[in-house]
Image 1 (cartoon, rainbow, N blue to C red):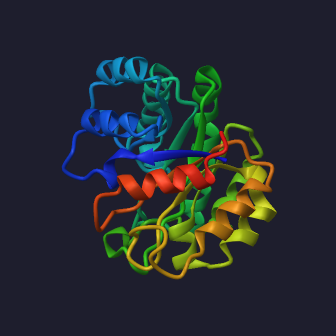
Image 2 (tube, helix red, strand yellow):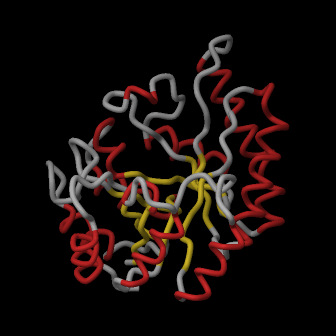
Length: 255
């Protein structure tokens, strides 16, 4: 199992460049992060070379897949994000699909989402990059209220309908636990449709060992699955995360 570390949640108040140095100094060599537009990609590439680091995933520039009026802008966002991913040697993008368009029915928004993903496929094929649509919870993280895609069940149904190897799901265990539960069996039954996994404790989205999720069991289960992607550690720490990250890495990173 391969682990990556989200520089934006784990090191709030620290630049990505400082976070990379901190992680590398502790033998943690793979990062992921959200927005790429506000970062110096050339500087990140240089730090990657200096410290022998990798980027597991970045996030597609925010646009709406559920509103057909935003189709052209969405395809452009995917194309530009894929270009950025290629600059970093990153093969996976996490894709938030957008908030509900009030003038459309849910059926119309789902239709737009599917058609929008189909429209993105040529850009994904050209770049050789996978986009992974991400369901998010709207029960606890109220700032996400109105986000369209809230369950892994719907996300997986959409990906199966599209049936393309570069369109998959980002399976965030924290969000799935809030909205649906049964986090291990859902992965086991659908692992070939999942391109990226993320992890945080619940409740609170803090350290993995705080809360109701047994991450030793979850990670051991992932190791038994036919999964070659990364598991991103994406929590908001209550205290300095480095010692915890080193323990997680020593126990669960198998490369």
